[in-house]
Image (cartoon, rainbow, N blue to C red):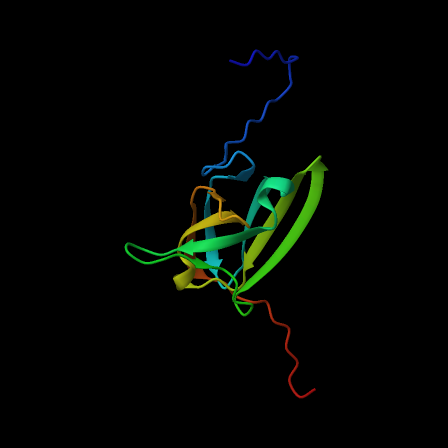
Length: 151
């Protein structure tokens, strides 16, 4: 139980972030649970953070996956014609590191509807993953084009 007292007029924001450990006390994946609704043709950004002990985990592979429907395997979002991923890593303290991964789904279309999950895998094979993020694609995105004729 946490006992907190706030001054009058002070706001408190508590975010629900999910962390999952799979047989490892040195690897966790964090990000807030949400559903993203996007317009067809726009972009969607998926962000997660993996905290890990470098001495115990070694090199860690962190990537977003699209979860397929029943009986199908998930796949990594690595196709550069559809996804743009940036990675930032910092040493937080001692052997602990924080790797932030953001994958942008460029020009979302109907096949991008579905569930996504961030997974982290240590060199030893230990894994941690977050919960599902749902992406819903709606309507059409219209570009605002300024075209010149006869230039």
